[in-house]
Length: 212
Image (cartoon, rainbow, N blue to C red):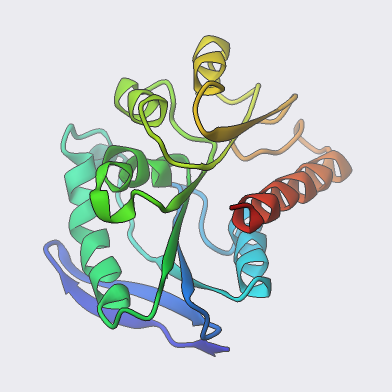
């Protein structure tokens, strides 16, 4: 497997990304949350699941302060960094399938942009703790024809039972985890329970990427 951090010029300056290349014909782009980096459990093990299934992975290393995240044009700001990476990775045409996986703030570019683009109509979308209290994100998922997975805890500040019920009518598999917070952890110190949740999420991701 090749791992070689790269840099590319974006509108907001130089953006770096790390591709993990197994040489397959599928690629998964991952989008981190604000305080949840790629070395945290959900991303670390999601990456391992993808690679085990011969799916290449790309971690995009954007970072924004809280003031920037509150701007109305945050989707454009993020996509100005993300698009050059996606274009650079896909330019050689070696990938037949794309998967997008985001957590928390990382679901903003997926829901508000990538899910609406014709070239990614067949892409699977994996949304971990999506920000469904935001109308734009909720409506985008609700109106999407994509297949994918949505995981959220019922102790997440963005959990909304009414909206989850509506989203259950989409092509997304919805997994609501009882007592899980925005990091999909259980309680303050419940290590074993939180590890079991992590196992459950990885099993659901495995099912998602293996299904037709």
